[in-house]
Image 1 (cartoon, helix red, strand yellow):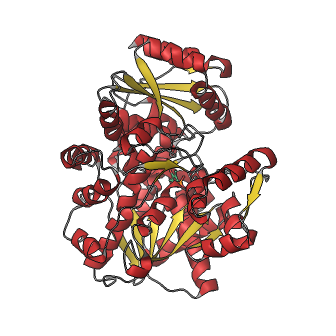
Image 2 (spheres, rainbow, N blue to C red):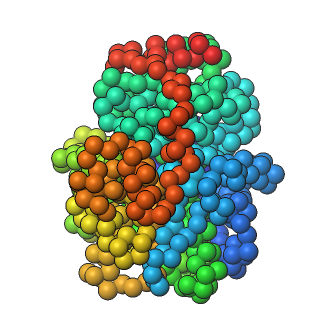
Length: 507
Ligand SMILES: *Cc1c(COP(=O)(O)O)cnc(C)c1O
């Protein structure tokens, strides 16, 4: 299969798309055609475990990898020892037509593990296939979850290294500890004196500096990105939409061919887009592809996507930015939306290039009424602010004795609003993206009130949550208390290039 750019550019293989990340014309790589999954193929998934389900889906997209290569990569990525649930991505029942797909059982307790455990293996295989013998040096700017997931994924993977910049202002104590205690001989963690925007624009500047590339190449390394625009991060996410459907079939909650809804807490639009790709694997009218009625796009107060879907098909980033209790969704430019626009515009790359140019120059673009109607035939959208979200955590805990993290609670709340306004009672899967223990203080505040949290650090909040819910504190959080700090490097905004070279020099 070949991959094309959303801005109209040339064909590459899957391994080239993964190695390059971004297309030379600035667009994102998308499959030239979608591989197909019939209902019979989906029925066959019910008898398979998560790893075998992953192999079925990945083979369809990554056809310049052989089955053994993919099977080996999947076996190491989703090794039993790395996940604290044997099902890897279990589906839990909340009530008769509401289910939760839990994607937080990996090493860093957030759904980013589902992709970043596999990406390093796909990257090294892609390097080999394309005659790239240099070390692949991954560079990441993080606001919290991505950095730790990338470090855990690339840790001690031969032929790679992983360097993460995190801002001194902006990551939580647990997130910072998760990163600075990371093991592995090929990991580097650098504190940047500044905020996330400084880290992000600094890393972008390094990627576009010919000088910096040369200095890195002179050390026998080649730069690469683990950002969510890389197709290698998208494809592992398609798997769990099929897996959840197979789980519902096995549980007798649906019959083969029944449509379901998915509600997804959304930031960069990567997770929900993977679901849309699952649905696109064949024409729904021919009963192919994943049978989905609606994808419900759930946002926090940074609700640029809600407005885009609901108001008038205009994407306008010229608005206030809010810091919320669901920080991984605090984003105003959803980069993976470009892949959905490409489908919405009948794959007209020139039109996408024009919209993206407008977004840069005048902060907005509009898709027009007809295209908006098409979008609303597959998507719905809503948002919940911090107060709604806290209320939802408390309500779900009281009614179902189920503890949700702040991001998942946004989705749960938006689902309730959607059901009330649309009357659509299709069986729905809430996609859960983080463990409540990753955001223990906010979750405890929601279920027990502000006073219960006063004076407690993140670990004490976790213990208190465990006492109240009976849900055990994950080993990954407990271990943080005693792990030694291994990474103490820090730098100023102007010193990022040198900090990377220093990190490389040391090892
Ligand atoms: C990254 C993240 C999201 C947002 O996912 P996108 O693919 O960017 O839409 C939601 N929740 C959590 C916990 C995350 O880490």
